[in-house]
Image 1 (cartoon, rainbow, N blue to C red):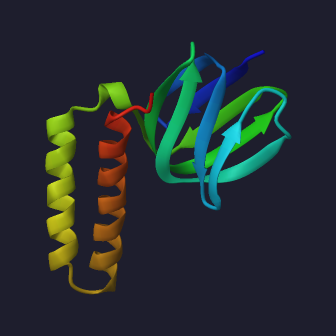
Image 2 (tube, helix red, strand yellow):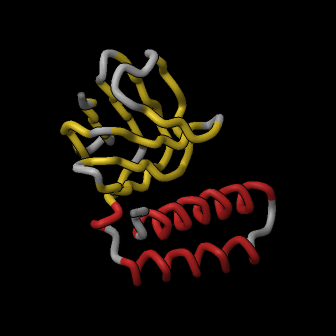
Image 3 (cartoon, rainbow, N blue to C red):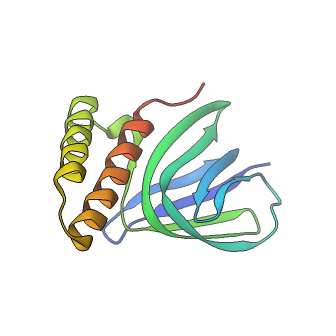
Length: 133
């Protein structure tokens, strides 16, 4: 038995196919979704979506949004998403280093909040590059 997973951003369809299982980062922690999961709707945090397909795990960086799960259908609506395999490791590492520097030099509440969000996004992209086996 499989799940139908759709990952959508405002500009594109990132994923639309069957999967065996997913691990999703929600605002209240990680949840695993298998076929016949109880229907839920949840907010998605900035984090990693892990997808099990053909007994292999794939990763995707998600930048916050919402998910609806029911009847073996998962619809994930996010601000942005990137497959781990599509992320350039050097660019992601450079972005992370810049984000870390920006957190250190941020002044004022707004700058600190924005710098910390950019750091979370950068860390998520770096984490998505290394799929679990």
